[in-house]
Each structure stands twice: as C-alpha cells, then as structure tokens.
Amino acid sequence: MKEGRQLSTKTIKPIPSDKECIDLLWDAGCKKRVVVHCATVRAVAEEMAKGIPGADMATVIAGALLHDIGRSQDHSIMHAYIGSQIAKEKGLSPILVDIIRKHTGAGLDAQDVEEMGLPPGDYIPATLEEKIVAHADNMVSDNRVVSHRHSVDKLMSKGAERGALRVELLHQELSKIYGKDLDTLIEVVGEFPKLKHVKP
Image (tube, rainbow, N blue to C red; front, side):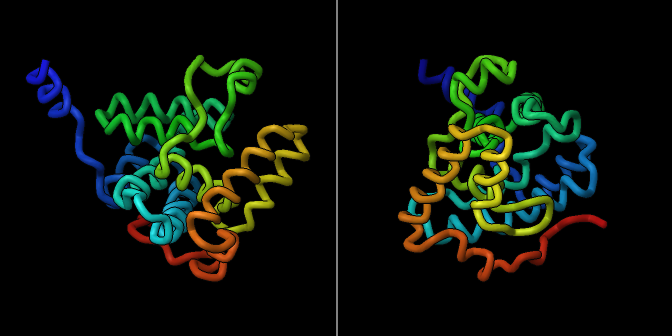
C-alpha cells in the first residue's frame, strides 16, 4: 500500500512556477485578456497570502494564475469545471485542480450546482489556498482591483442572494485572519498592479 502511494505521487507534477503557469495559459489557448486577468488575481492573492498565516504561497500563486484556464474553452460558469479537467489532464496537483474547480464567487452549493447544470461535485472552497484564490478573484474585475462589494453587488443584481452572502462571509472570514479589511489591498497593490511574466 505504501509503495502504491509513492508511485502515484511521482506522476503528479510539482507546483508550477509563475512562468510555467503563464505558459500553460497560453498553450491552452487563453486570450491575452484572460492571461492579464489571471496575473492580476495573482498579485492580489499573493498580497493576501502574505498576511494569512499557514497559507502555502507557491500553491496560492499557481492557483491564482491558473484559476481561469478553463476560459480557453468556455466563458460560462462551466469554465471552472472545464479548467479543473484541463489541469487534471496536464497532470497538475489535485490541490490545483480543486482550487480551479472551486474558485467561482465563494463557491457553489449543491443547489447552485444542480440549477446551473454542473457535473455533481464539491465546488465550495475549504482550504486557505482555495479561499484566498476565490476571494482574490472576487476582488478583480477584468484587470482592475476592486472592492469585494463589486462581486457582492453583481451577484445581488442577478438574484443570486445566497452567492452574494457567501462572498460577504468569505470576505469577513479572511479579513479577520488577515487582521484588517481586505478591501485595503487596493491601496497596497494598486488598482492596476504591475504584472509579472505576462507575454505581450
């Protein structure tokens, strides 16, 4: 049994570097707008993780960069599931596969999954890394860093009250661990942060 575990971990690639993540996005067929968005989410997630004890920085950064890899094929809510499958096919860590699948809003509950016609599964972020990436994404609109209220208001306008509440609760949870309101990150990283490794 022990040998089987060792063998299975060898087939899983280590957490990819920034450049490897960006290359994966381009290779998957993501448009520049998606790559820039992912790099912006990375900037917010990195800063957030710096103030959250116990968060694995390499995992947060790779998860943030790869969270929208599914947008290479689809721009609906299905992009998160599709992205998780792309990550799985590429042999990426199950930790990254889960981050990608669970990143939309503050996750999707069983009712959302059924209503949206998603494949059954767990879409609620549970680990620190999953929560950080999901919430960093909530704080980025296209390539601009915004208040978490942007996502809350957007969900409310679509009639997704439960989703809006989950985003608000996630914001409060992570802000408490961080030690101050995470909306202050706009001042730290800037509204349009300087991005790393994005090819022209």
